[in-house]
Each structure stands twice: as structure tokens, then as C-alpha cells.
Image 1 (cartoon, helix red, strand yellow):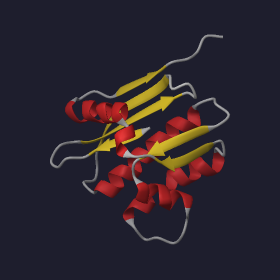
Image 2 (cartoon, rainbow, N blue to C red):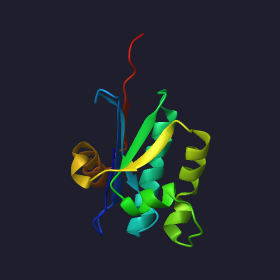
Image 3 (cartoon, one colour):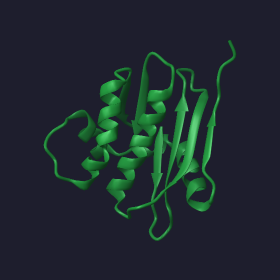
Length: 137
């Protein structure tokens, strides 16, 4: 799940949460995003962070959920687009091409409550949060 919070002039931030097929949290990020005030660019950066995390997981199939329908459509249906957001999705395209076990789907914002809380934490904190859990052998 992925949640981006942006409230000008507050800091833009992203919350990324990874769960296994049982719903158990296996990893997460809360990170401030800087460099641009454009909401679409911030969403694209956050989605790329989520795909990067998903591609690092050692699962046979990983689904990235995003509440940004516009960007999910851009990732699923590539076509010529001169938007700035598309430029910021280039790494996401490359990751998806090289990690065929990772896919992206749209999910309603109301389904991302924990990711939303992580984004809120990042927007109000000066600290990056990263956590993961490895199952014992």
C-alpha cells in the first residue's frame, strides 16, 4: 500500500507499507520528499519508492497498490506523454520491466490507513523511518 500526503506549505511525504499474503506487515518506509511542489511529481516519486521496495522483496508475486489512479493508468498503458510526472516514473518503468513478479494496481485511499499514518509521521518528523521483518528459517 502506498500513501502520499501533501499539504502546502507542509513537507511532502510518503508512507509505504509491504504486507505478505496473510496481511502481516513485512516492511515499511516513512520518508519526506523534497525538490518539487507539484502533487503529480510527488505521487510519482512515492509510487517509485513503493515499486523499489516491492522489487527488493523475495516473494514470487508482489502487488503494489496505489491510490493514484492517473499514475497507475500511466504505468499500465504506456504511451507518449510529455507530462513532468511521466518523466519521474522512468525508474518505475525500468523496475517493472526488470522485475516481472511486481505489478501495480489501483486501490481506494480509504484502504491505505497505515500508509497514511506513515506519511503523516514523515511530514511532521525530521527522521526517516524504515523497518522490515525477516521471517525466521
